[in-house]
Length: 464
Image 1 (tube, rainbow, N blue to C red):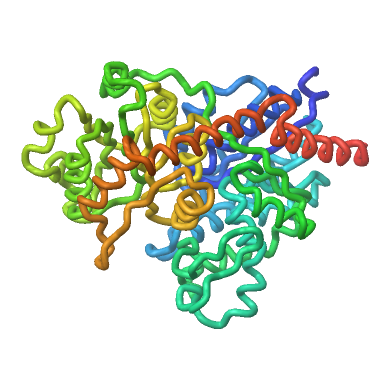
Image 2: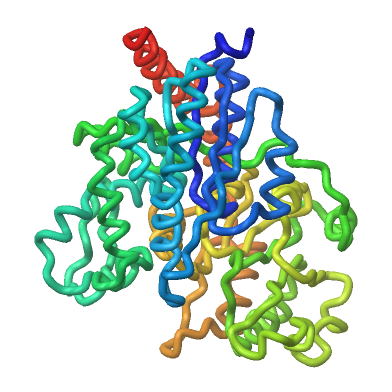
């Protein structure tokens, strides 16, 4: 009965762990700071993964979850991009979502439906049930500013953005060359672009947009959005806190315990994305040439000969020559493992793909970055991290798109012991302190979330 009296929020995440994790942290803050109960409603086109189940099983009783029945995507072309697959999964899940929302309206004081940037088609259901349609934007305020600008760009630019001679102007941000915009904007004829544009046009229907960033990190973009009258609430950085205790199966945490403070470069590039055989060789030899300590998580598949074990691809004698100062482990670490590695005192740098979740984890832990963007919005992220915020170094690719070993060695050595790395390290220390401040009791992100909750409560008061 007591639970029936609590304000309740439904959260609709896109399929996949990348979008789920910051929403889980949002739910925890709603429960802890505002005594709100939460229900996750998860659309999918396949049975729930073990990782998803373990995350939800670890959450407090005030956070419930429903896995919607898997939808059928067999009619979707095999080459459909992830933006298309996610959007269709959510649209085809709407009848099931409606049933769950109806049940919540009958049994709880539900005030809002929170979706991420691919969930705007669920707004019609929020309107039907008289609850607040709210967006949680899981990536940068820079990308959000671009998305708000996208309908205008689509109307005024006739060519592909990558062919533009002048950089694209994004309000509050440094101009970005068209070829460095996020991947789905690179081919305007593809359905992925059409879906991004579709959702961007519907952002105006939201009662507010929470963004997983904070003013010290992206002051220009956040200011520009607010000056345009956008109802934007920077509530980040939301990253994994108190990760699930895990068994150190490969011994990487024990190995870190034996290394000097701040001496190890953690190398983990991509989640489900592959490197060529040639690039893996260059990366290995670059790490060796740098003479720095490293912990390298190697993904299991490569774009060539993916059936072979990754250790077979390493240069002959590499493991033996780097023994003692380097540890290579198979597979991308779990979310919990990565959180523990980045918070470990021996970790002094993070060589990664510029994904926003990992970037925010680095910021929260004060770990400087080597940015190696691979896909999605990562090129834009890398530019921001290196040229604007200045918390990262960026090794340069040659004319063939390959980052050579000497360039990798230069970046690694520069980050871990060079003057350029020292400046980046001090800058990241400032960002770490700013991140802690905005999430404190009187911090700007805490206040922004409280403002969202007040709007929800007003929504409820008008309805009762």
